[in-house]
Length: 318
Ligand SMILES: [Zn+2]
Image: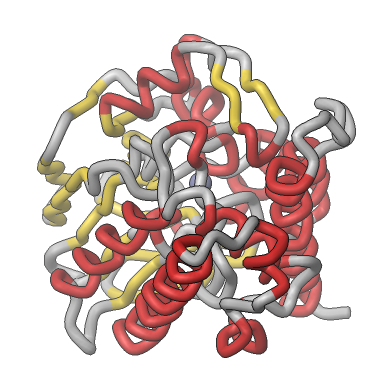
C-alpha cells in the first residue's frame, strides 16, 4: 500500500472514530468508553502509525498531513512558523518532515484552537524554540481541566510549555520575515477559541476546524461550539477568499472556494431540515429516522454512523 492510501485509510478511521465518540454522547449518556479506550487514545494511536505527508502549496508555504489536524509550515530566513502542532507521538516524523523543508528551527507556533489534535505537540515545539500565539480562550482551555462530552474525555491541564504566551481577543497581526499574517477570531464556532490565519502575500488561509473538507464536521458544544457558529464562521470564510485562494481546512485535503461553498450549502440545508423536524416536535431518534442529511450523505457522510451523529450534533443546537 502506498503512502497516499495509508493516509486516506488513517483519515477514514479517524473520522469514523470521531463519529463514534460523538455517538456516545448523542445516543448513550452513560459512559460507554473509558478514557483508556475512547476516541482520544484512538486518535493518538492513528497518529502514531500515520506517515506525515508534505504538500508544497505556494511561495514558501507547505502543509503537513497525518498527525491530527493539518499543520501549515512557513519557511523563513532563519526560522519556521507552524500553524498547529499535531500529536506528540508524531514528533520524530514531523521533525523529519520539517527538516526536509529547511534546516532552520521552528521559531513561532500559532494554534487555530485548543483541541488536542492541534495542540498536543505544543510542548515539544516550544522546547525546540518556538513562541506560541493563540486566541485567549485557547490559553484558558489548555490551562485548566476541560471536558469534551462528544469525545467522552476530560483533558488535564496542559504542561506549562504548551500554553500560549501571546494571546489576543479579536485580531492580531504577525510578521515573519517578509510574510504578513492576519489572525482573526471567529467568535464561538467549532469551539469558543477558533481563529483564521491569512497569509496575505501567498493568498492562503488556514481556517482550522471551521472546515472539514469532505466530512461532516465535529462540533464541540462542551467548549462553546454550535451549528449556528459553524455556519457564521463559514459565511465569513467565504467573504475573505476568492477563486484563487488556497484554503487549508482543519481536516481533509487542501481546498478552494468552490468546495467551501458546497460545505456551506450542506451546513445550512441540514440545519434547516433538522430545525423544521424539531419544531414539529420530533425527538432526536425520529429526526434521525427522517434522514435530514440524505441529499448529502454520499459526499459528506460515507463513514461509520456519521449521518446520524451529525444530525445529533445539529439537533443539539437548533
Ligand atoms: Zn477541533
